[in-house]
Image (cartoon, rainbow, N blue to C red):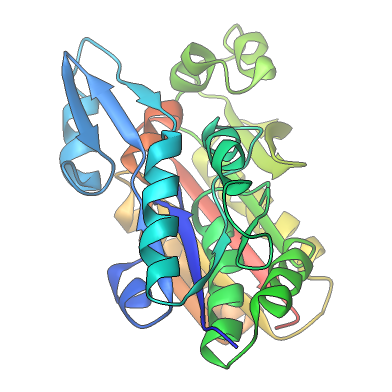
Length: 282
């Protein structure tokens, strides 16, 4: 039986120590800005990106992972006798899944498997980590795929943004345009639902947004255990640290991860984005 390598992309923005200690490989997405191309998390890091975005008169665009990048890493891993489980960003958010789908049929179906994760950011990371932990424990490719599929039903994620202009400009959520005409300080609560960004509700302050997200997470957990929590942010570390402290006290998680929103994802949500993801039952 071959060992299994989990391949994801930089939208997950897994902390480097977790990537280094698990059978995980990360392919960077691409950011295009003022005539320059940057590999997400390689050529440009989160802090640098958000500092520039907050003062820039231009907005970056993003590009899906080209098929050749998936093909190259699959070939590289097969040569050293790994089976490969591909877990890219949701097909409802990026075309990277379609890029992967265009090449997987070039490889043996019992060696390479692709799943539409329907997730992004640290919610995707939870799914990736679940599969990677199974792989590290000796699970085969079929078993790792089953773990990833089961993990999807155990994960939830909610987030709020400081301004709706990035979501509206990127066309990632139709309701963003509708909300732009509302009060200037409105804070939407959004979730990843069936692989797409959807509006849950809106409130009139950052504090109420945090309270609403915690309530939604509590409802999602529904007294199940164990619980894993991640808080991730875009240039909002102080608030993120406060949120993760509240979540630790409230939900007693066995794992707590503080991370950032990757530049590619942040180009569609903007500075000030604050999010919380949970996983239960594993």
